[in-house]
Length: 634
Image (cartoon, rainbow, N blue to C red; front, top):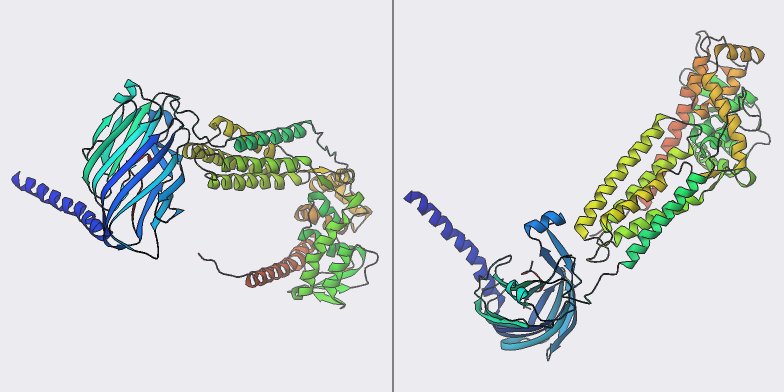
C-alpha cells in the first residue's frame, strides 16, 4: 500500500512540474508584467457593455507596446436538463466590438482568428519600464435565444493574457437593477479556462445596481467571469439579426414551387397515340427520326445513314476478313447539310473508304454534323419550347439555397457548406429527372423508376443535412418550415414530367414513329414473311431505323427463320449460308465499332489538347462570455 501511494505521489509531483513549467517559461518570455489592471464597465439594458480599461504595464524588455484581443464569438452552454430539451451542447453568439478609443497612444484595429485586435503603440518607438494604457470600447451582444430567461455573461478578465497581473480591480454598473432573486443567483467564476468556482479567491461585492471586486497576484492565462440568470425581457432593444431576407427567399421558394406544381397538375399531358406503321416515314431519314425521339444528336443516329445510303443506291458495302470497304456509287443529291458533311468526311474526294482507316477529317465532320442535324428542327419544325416550369423550378432551387446560406442568427454565410449541398443535390435530382423525362415517350424502361428512387434517396440525404444545419447554425427559420420549403422545391423537380412543352410538329410525328417502333418490337413472323414477300428489301429498308430505336438486334432476331438474299449493294465475306444475322453483325462490328473507336480517339485527343492549353498552378475559449480575450506585447 505504501509503495502504491509513493508512486501516486511521484506521478502527481511530475504532473505539477509539467503544468507549471510552461507557465513560468511563458511569463519569462513575455518581456513585461502588468502591475495594475482596472476595468470600469456598464452593462446596458440593450445587452451592450461599455468598457473602460486602464492597464499599467512594466516592460522588462524594449517593446513597441501592447495588443488587446477581444473575442468576437461567445459560447453559452446549457444545464443537463436544457441540453436534453435543446438537443445541442451550447449556443454561439456573434459579437460586435465598436467605438474603440485609446487615449494618448497610437493604435490600429483589425480582425484576426475570430478576435478584434487592438494594437497599441508606435512601430517607430519602443517602451521600457512603466507605461499606462487607457482604452475604451463597446461590446454589442445580440438578442439571446433562450425562451425562459435572459442572462449576463461577461468575462471581465480574459484567459489569454500571457503574463502575470499583480493587482486587478473591476466595477460593473447595471443600467437596469437586479431583483433580489437575481442577485442570489449571480456567480463570479475565476481561475483556469472552464473553471466553475472562484479559484482565484476574487473578493467582490454584489448589489442590485453593481458588482465590484479585486484580486492579487494573478498568473498567466487566468480568467474572471460573471454570470447571472435574469428574468425574461430584462434586456430590451438588443441587436437582432436581419432575418427578413432569409424569410423572403424561403417564402418566394414556396411560391415558385407551388406555381410549378399547379402548372404541372393542370397541364394537359401530351398524350401520344401510336399509329401502326409497317414502313419508315418517307420524309424522314434515320438521323432525323433519332433526333425526334430523344431531342439529341446521337452518334448512332448519324451512323445509321451508312446503311440508309446503301439501300438508296449511293454506295456499296464490301466485307473483308478484317475490314469493311465502302464504295461510292454516285454523289448525294439534294440532301440536308448534315448528310453532306458526313459524306464528305467519309470519302474526302476518294471513291472508296476502308472503315479501319477513318480519318481525323471524318471525325471532325461527324462532330460538326450533330449541330447541323439539330438546326433542321427549328422554326416550324421545332420539337418543343422550354416550359416556364423549368425556369421557376431552377429559381426555387436557388432561393432555397440562399435561404440556407443566410439561415443563421450568428453570422452571414454560416450555412455556406449546406447551401452548396442544396445546390448540388437539388440539381443532381433535377438532372436525373430531366434525363428520364425527355425520353420516356419512346424509351420507357425500369431505369425511369430507378432514377426516381435514386433522386428520392438523394433528397432524403439533403433533408438530414438541413436538420443538422438547423441544430448547428442556430437557424433563423424553424426546422419544420425549412423542411416544408425543401420538400416543396423537391416536389417541383420530381413532378415535372417533361421540362419541354411538345410542339405540334413533334406531336404529329410522334404517333406514327411510336407505332412504327412498337411494330419493330412486336411484329409477328407471319406479318414479316408477308412484308418480305411483297418487298425483298424490306429487312434492309427498316434496319437503319431500328438502329436509332435501339432495336437493330431485335429486328435481326425476328428474321432468324425468314430466308433472305444479300442485297445487290452488299458483298459478304463469309461463305456460310447467308442470314439476317450476317448483315447485322457487319453493321455492328464492321461499321459501328470502327466509327465509335475513331470518334472516341478524336474526342480523347481534343480533351488532351484542351487540358494542356489550360494547365496552370494553384497556391495556396477565452474565459467565457462577452469580452475577455487577452493580449500581449509587441
